[in-house]
Length: 253
Length: 292
Image (tube, rainbow over all chains, first blue to last red; front, side, top):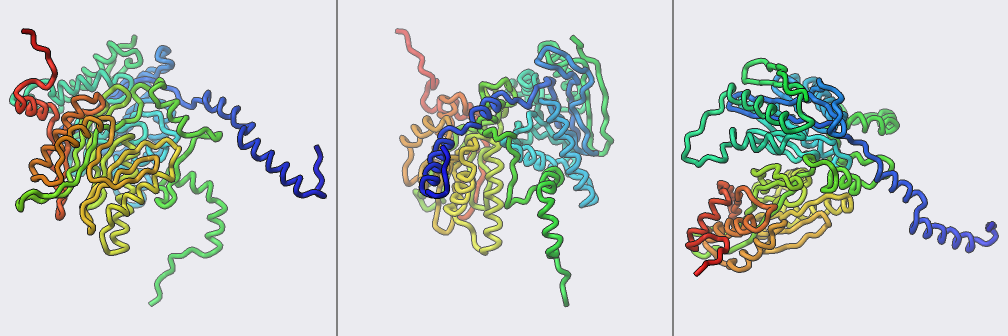
C-alpha cells in the first residue's frame, strides 16, 4: 500500500498500527533472544585455590592445571596466583580469560595508586577495591572465584574471599574453585578446629603448619577431583620478609 | 587574592565530550567511576542482564561453585522499656549463613551493615547486592549530614534506598533489607526490597527463615519488654528459624539500637542457643515418639 502525504491522518494511522505491531512482536527480538540464550562467553578451566592467614603470615596455594570441559587437560603450568605487590596476592579460579582480565585491572589500578600516592596500596584497600570492581560487572559478571591475601597495615595475615559479583568477607582461611567443597571442610577441621570442644587445647597455627596444611589440601584434592593437579603453586608472605614462591609436584593424572 | 581556577576552559570541555566514550572505557579500568553516574557494563547485543546472569550463574547453570551468595533470616522489632532501668529501642537479630546453591559458602557473614551512627541495614537476598547498595546509601547519608548539618531520618534514608533499587528494577537485583534506626522522630524500621517496596513496620522479618521467625515473634512479642527479654526474644526467633530452615544457620548476630547508642552484642552460636532452649523446656527440641 502506498501512502501519499495528501492524507496525513492515514499516514499517521498506518504509522501507529505499524508501531503497535512492532512493539507487540519485534522482529529482531526473537532472533536476538535465541542468539542471546546460546551466546556463552564463559568457559570453566577448573583448578582450585586456597589461602590461610596466620598471626603475621599468609600462605596461598593453587594448582596449575588448566582443563577444558572437565576432562581435557589443556595446559599444566597455568598460574592462578598473581603477586600484585610486596603485600598483596591475588588468587583466582574460574574462567581463565576473566582471571587474567581481573589481574590486569587490579594491576593497572595499583599502578595508578602508586603513581598518585607514592606508596603501595595496602591489602585492606585493595580488598574493597576488588569488591567494587567485581560489582561493577554485576550484569555481565566475571566468571571467577577470587581470593585476595596479604599482609595488612598492622602486619597481620589477611584473607578476603569473594563471590563472582563481589560479596566480600575477611576470613582466616578460604578456598575457591572446583575443589572448594573438599578443601574448606579440611580447613574447618584443621584450622578452624570446629570438630573439637571448646575446652580442648588446640595446636597453634604456625607458618610451618599452615604450609603443610595447604600442601595437604591440594594433595587430597588432586586425589579426588579431576580438574585439580599437576603442580602446587605455593606463595608465602610473612611480615617483614619478601614474598616466597615455590612449585611442588602433584599428581599428573 | 585570586585563586587559581579549577574550571576547565570551554574548549577543553568540548574536546572531552568528543572522547567521552573512549575516556569512559579507560576510566573503568583506571579509576573509580563517578559515583553519581555509576556505570555497569551490560552484556552485548541487547541480551537482558537478568536472563544472562541467571543462565550462567543460576541454579540450572553448570557453575556449581560460582553461584552468588545468598542471605537468609533477618528480623527487627521496636519495643518500649518496661522498667526505668531499661533503654528500649530496636532489636535487630540475624543469622550468619551464606549459601551458594546447596553449598554453605560462609558460616560467619555479618548481615547487619552500618549505615550511620544510629542506623543499620540488614542483608537478605543477594549478599553482594546488599553490601554494595548499602554502602551507596551510607555514603548518601554521610553527605546528607555534612550538607544539611543534621542527621538524616530513617525514613529519608530508606526512601533513597528504595528509589535506587527501583531504578534497577527488572535487572535482576535481589535485595530484601530492613533499614532500622533511631532518629529525631524516634525508632523506625523500614522494609525495603529490590522490587521497590518500602513499608514502615514495628515488627518485621525477611528471608527464607522469616516464617519461623514470625511464628516466635508473634507469639512472644510484647510492646513493652525489658532489654534482656527483648534480646532473648530476638535470639530465640533466630534460633527457631535456623532450626527449621536449611538456608539459615551459623551464629546469631544482634544489634540493639537505644535512643542514645548502637550496641553490637557478641555473636552466639545458634546450636548453643538450641541447647539452652532444650534445657529450658527439659527435653530435646525434636519430637520423638515415646513407646510405652
